[in-house]
Length: 115
Image (tube, rainbow, N blue to C red; front, side, top):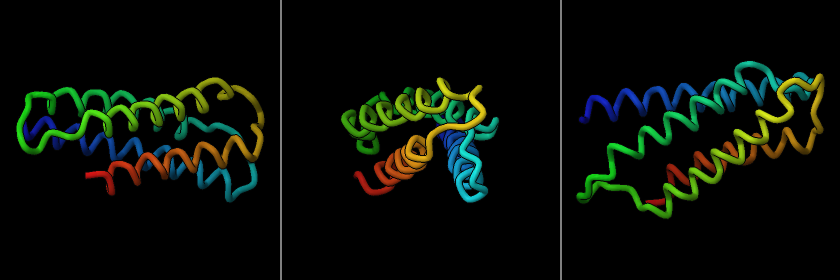
């Protein structure tokens, strides 16, 4: 079970890197559009996050707080919606793009600092 958790955690981190890296790259370039890295990063984050929380629901001392998991799920779904809906547009609003980056950073902060 620990090997599965570590594999899922690795996949989750790859999704985070794709999502945040793709978004920051687009932001710095000045082209505010949803690229494939952002789209796939949001999909990987959502799917692997759900899968990662499922094996941990067996009880025990290391089980994450259900409220924390709910908050992270809410942020992941919001990010996915913000990425998926405008994915075919040539350009999105700068504020929308900043929202994607901010929610991604906040979701990571919840994972790190909420114990």
